Image (cartoon, rainbow, N blue to C red; front, side):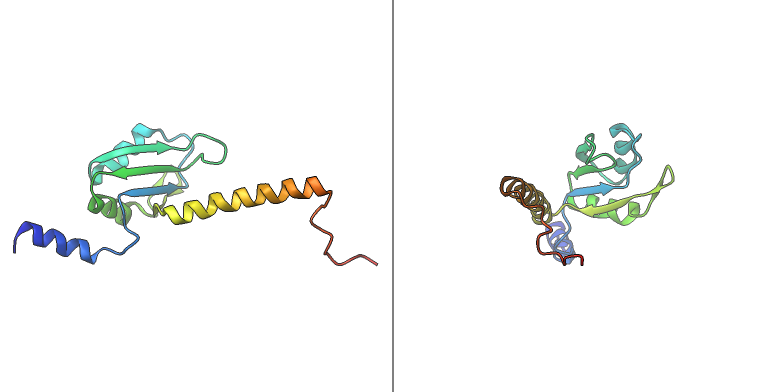
Length: 130
């Protein structure tokens, strides 16, 4: 069997959610990008690491591998891995899920803006106290 056929066979066996971009949660806040390169670089060539630095994104990172199989190997080996007494949560990046989250935040902000504009507190349909 040729190398191209073996690679195509491997690609067909991967679940559809597998991709080169990993979303890592529950990182120690003190962990640097260099430490992430050292930890995740054991499983293959890394194209990019983005570490969250705002209040909402601290403890998270995006890691982009050059090869999808390296990303899968990293997920298989590092999910639940203990780093500085924290267990890593590693997910494959899902753009649909990310857009939905952003959409919900926008909708919540719009709802609050409309409530303020019309003087409604959002509790008008709650049961009244007697």
